Amino acid sequence: MAVLSLDRLSKRFGARLAVDAVSFEVREREVFGLLGPNGSGKSTILRLVTGYLYPTSGNVRVAGVDVVRAARAARERIGYVPEDSPLYGHMRVVEYLTFMGRLRGIKGRALDRAIDQLQGSPIAASVLTEAISELRQKRLDVYTFALYFDHESKAISVCADTASNSATTVRGINTYNRKYFDPAVASGDLKAASLWCSNIGRSLSLGDFVAKNLARASVKGSIIGNEFFVGMLRALMDAESEVATLTSDKDTLLLCCTGPSDETEFYWGLPTA
Image 1 (cartoon, rainbow, N blue to C red):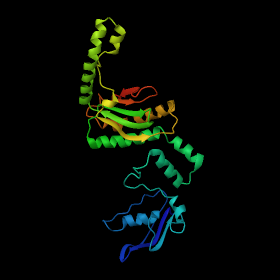
Image 2: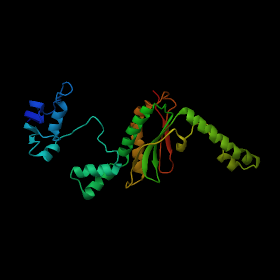
Image 3: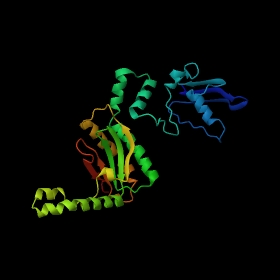
Image 4: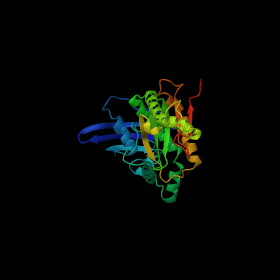
C-alpha cells in the first residue's frame, strides 16, 4: 500500500489555478522530493497533503486515510518537519509541552508524567542547541562555556566567557583579595590568608561572564535531584563537539556544569587527540 497517494489533485485560489490535476504515489521507505521553480505549487501540494488546505478537486490519502473525510486520523499519521523551528516563543517550556500533549489527546496525570520525563536532560539539550546557535551568531571566541542551573528560579541557561574578559576579571579579583591577604599575613592569621589567595587560573564567576543566561528555560515542577544534574552533565558532554566549534583554541576551552552544591561544581576540558 502507498503511504501517500494523490489522485488528480487540484487547487484554485479564485481564478488562479495553483495545482493542476497532480497524481503520484509514495511507497513505504521511499524518499520522494518535489522539484520545481518558485510558484509551481510545491508548498501548496504539501499544505494539501497535511490538511492545512482543502483541495478544489481530487483526493489525497495518507496511509489509506482520506485527508478531507478523516482529517484528524490522517494528521495522526503525518510527521512534518517545517523549515523553521515550530516553537512558540511566548510559551514557557512546560506550557509548550502541555499544549502539544493536549493536541495529541494526552490529558491529566498521563500528561503530567510525560512532561516530567521530558524535564532535565532533554530541556538542557534544547537550551544548549539554542545557546550554541546564538553564540555562533555573536561570533564569540569562547574560553569558558557553562551550563547553568539557577537553584532559586529553577531555570537552565548557558553562560560563556572569553579569554580576555576572564583575564580582566581575574585581575580585579586578585586586586580585591590583596587588600585582605596582606593584613591577614601581617596578623599571623593563616586561615584568613588562605581565603584571600590570588586566582591563578581563570574566572568561574558566571555573573562576570561576557554572555549570561542564554536560551533560559524554566524547569519548575521538576524533581531536582542527582539524576537531574547527571542529565545536565550528559547533555553538555554530548554537545562537546558543537561547543568546540565556538573557540579558536580547543586546548584551553573549559566546560562547566552546575551541580547540587555549586554553580560551577563540575568542569573539564576537551579530550586530547
